Each structure stands twice: as structure tokens, then as C-alpha cells.
Image (cartoon, rainbow, N blue to C red; front, side):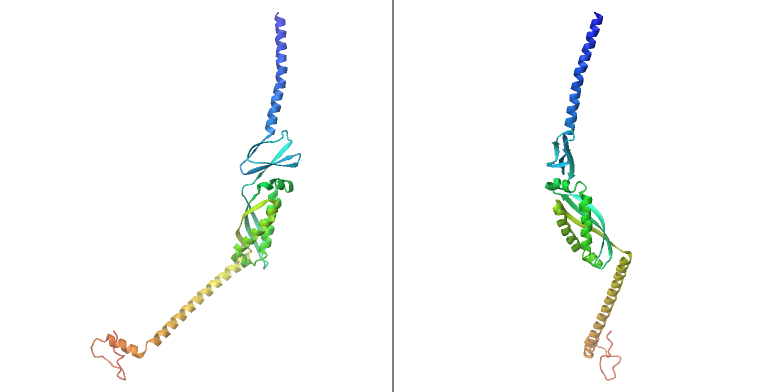
Length: 261
């Protein structure tokens, strides 16, 4: 009896184990299926769905989304929020002076163009399209101005470069928001020449101011000497006379020698 009970117990344990293993396998399969079929897309992002490397045309928006599991669908996420790209660009001015500038571009990908960008350029679109476009546009715009004009006409240069860059990136579905030229740096010799020119200009303006002031003083003195006539001096002397006889007279008896104090 004991042996029989033992055999029955062993048989029941084996039967339970055989029944449990398929259920465990099914559970694992369903878990992996669910795990590989869900994607979470963040705020301001778009997911491009591909199947065996082919763009399906389906774009996932923010939130939880479902795709084909087990790697049948892959999702590449693109950020469509406003982005910033800073590029140190070197160019030559119209008078062949080397100029280096820090160019900052604010841009974003248009939502409806994400699949096309993924298909034609890929997720390295910044290195392939944006950065080269910034360098090329800055070089072309700088060549239209002399080195001195680059300093005085920076706003015009910025407007021209931004307009050209907007037209250049628009076909790719990239929208330009703002372009900024942070700083200009020229060669050491040109910078020294500008400083010397500014000092010379300041000295010339100071000398001109001193000359104008001297001329003004001379004209004032000449006008005063022309205004103070002999009759005017006599009138001033009579008005200031205290009634006492003068202590001295002029050679011709004139009273203009009466002391005024």
C-alpha cells in the first residue's frame, strides 16, 4: 500500500510539472510579445515605424503606441521641439580678410516631414545637412562684405544669411526660427590695424574739437573788440562816475580815462 501510494504521488507530481511548463512558456511568450510591441513616445517627439528597413509611413505621436512585436517593426524617435546648433565657421571677407564667427541656429523639424527625413537622410541629418548648410551660407554671405562692413553691417549680414539658410533647409522639412552671429574674430594684424585706426580717428576728432574751440574763442574776442567802441566806453564811464572830479584826464580832454572802479 505504501509503495502504491508513493508511486501515485510521484505520477501526480510529474503530471503537474508537465502541465505547468507549457503554461510557463506561454506566459513568457505573451510577456515578451507585449514588451516588444509597445513603444512610449515622449513629449515633442515623433516615432517613425519601419518594417524590415522599409519606412511604413506610420508616425507615432506622444504617448503609448503598439507596433508589430518580435522586431517585425522598428521605431526611430525624432525630436521635433526647437533645437539649437552652434557652429564655429571660418570665411573670407570681400577684401580677403580671414574671419571666424560663432553661428547659432535655432530650428526644428516639421511634424509631417519626419518620415521623409528618415527615408532620405536618416537620424544624422544635423551632420549631413544642417551644419554644412550653416558653413556654406556664412561663407557666401561674408564674401559680400569687406571686413570693416562685417562689423558695421552685422544686422544686414545676419538677415541675408538667415533668409538664405531658410530657403536652403525648407525642402528637407527643417524650419529655421532664428540665426545669430555671436562674435567676429579677425586676424591679429587686422585687429591691430583697426585699433590703430580708431586711436588715430579719436586723436583727429580731439584736435578738430580743440581747433574749433580756439576759433570760437577768437571770433568771440574779435566780436567783443568790435562791439566795445569809444562811445560805449565813455557811456560806461559816465554811468559809473560817482560825481567826483576825475583824478586824471586824457590828453585831448576826453573823459574815457575816468576810472570805472
